[in-house]
Image (cartoon, rainbow, N blue to C red; front, side, top):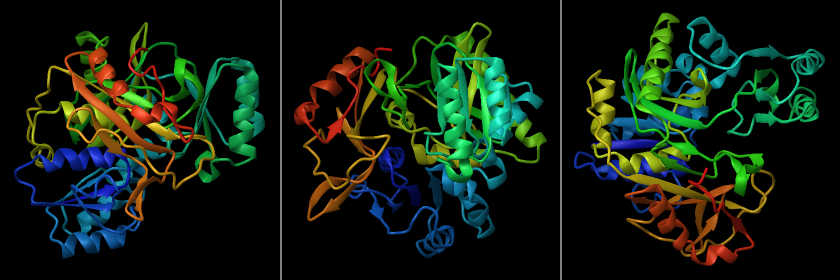
Length: 415
């Protein structure tokens, strides 16, 4: 079988690595891919937003399946285009991807179908938004409505921070159209965890839980990022919590999407928080999480290609998981999530199988691996406990410990 993986980050590198284990898969194409995938997949220079080009390529290479990593092509309708061309794709339609593409849509959907989440209000007028913040007080959460690469969420601990976030989004247009509307939510206090599931309409097959660390620096300090590390499973989440999340969140969402005329096929990612009333939704994504995928897929015992096919066909993939822990630490360019320099030569890091390195933002220049993004790499390991996985990762960091060009958190898995 020929498989096309759309995307260029760490999540897609992990998908490619897992697909390579399948005896059914002969050739994997990555569009556009990155330097780390080049040894496993054939990287092709087609941008993930060039949907017509991707359709033409999949036809030419007779791809039996296409898997989409990032959110932007999903919201641009890549699944619809592939389906219209008679090509098999594992991804939600444009109508279903709106669950991630618009936070206001997601909040209104959750309210309608009684999916537990924080109270909220939606604004596109800065003065009205500020009046609401002054009425509610802090802490409070301000979110850009559209896609903002994981950076459009401000958890404001003071009223001043919240008002500044409104100015940044609605006045300064820091997130362009993505921030033309804002969602302001009550602050929920509790431990967060991620629950991803393979979904085909009303059939939902959950993965193991994960927890990522969003803040840039140790001790959960600094700005929010796309994620500085993660581990799986989140072993403080009980069976009771999981049963509640499955019944009241995942299944209710899957059935609600059918009722809305937006049946969902693909990966449903629920970013959840434990409250006194049980798990509540912070956000939905309509694709694999990043960096959660990098620590969840190494624990999957199944043939990932067969899982995709089973789910598309509406069959139970009978997921089986390692009774182990996986932990990954993101290596980022100094300056991230703000301005940073590209083209820095990468240090030597573990090639695997354990610990392993996942490439997120790398390219090959003059036969040397150099940085090409804010989040550059993830170093991960599987072990019998989370503590031992962390030990394997941190002991392998080598010359990164004294780098002036890259940084990483030293407390992943401790919170």
